[in-house]
Figure: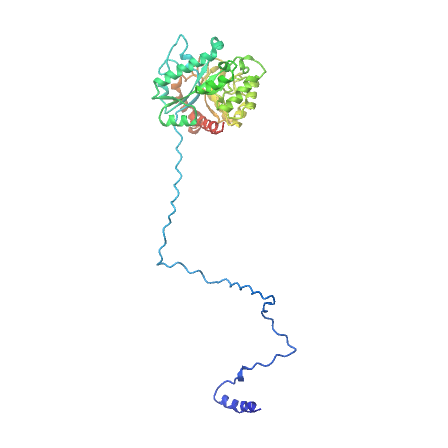
Length: 406
């Protein structure tokens, strides 16, 4: 009661002094029993006696303090990675030709000429006129040597090795892509050895390994005649490869010997295609659709070679161009036009058959004529097409072939 009287007496005095009244002792009135208490945070149940988990702090919206400008950044001790070396540009060859019978022709008894300089179609001197050409030298036995083909083929390799050894400053035997590139970058001629006709094996599969070890990297199962492997196109047979021929095809794939199908008859071609798994070549053949000669390739054969990643070497023999002993440059170009028309532009090169044919088209005298022939191709098509036919298509074929595991 005294406190109420004191309040009533003091309050007017406070208003007169401009002060705000206050509640004595900040006593809050008791809650109304009919009013709900506002919801608030509940106390955790600690009846188990365990300590409550600590509350996670709310994520701060303040940015992380940046590193002081005065602080020194330690240099990284990690070495910087070495830059990838630029790949070497492809070598320049001048030309790559897949078929020349120069060895057997130079060894004929009435010629007895060397390979360095001669009066036939190919020699080292004329090959040197190009950047670093690749020439395939063929080992072929005429009918008179069929019964002694194994020894005759070895004699031809002996002759070739002597000629190369005498002139090793300008020419080397190439056994794979690495050799071809190395020899070309040294500015030398690359020589590749090929056997034309399986007579050289004398029916023995081990002789295939023998010739591989002597440096042979291309092998044609037949020439025009029948042998232990199959039937050449001149036989007119509808039969294909014999069992020994199929055995040889599979062994060639294992060794890394390129299969050459140029002289096989049509049935033999398909047997070879179906029993080999690697890219292959028709080293010196033309288009049957232009000149229907049995030695030429039909369109389905051309497309099979393309699909396998193979290549076709163009043959300069007039008989395969016109079925006569004469041919013009337009006859030559007609075959190129057809090959390109059906999609073989990237699978077409040279297989001139120098020193293996009795006559050549007008304007072609020998290996020395290939420079002007490249100009003719560029005029008919373009520089890029000429370059592909003269060298880059065959180079890319060698890359495809030798990149595959044996």
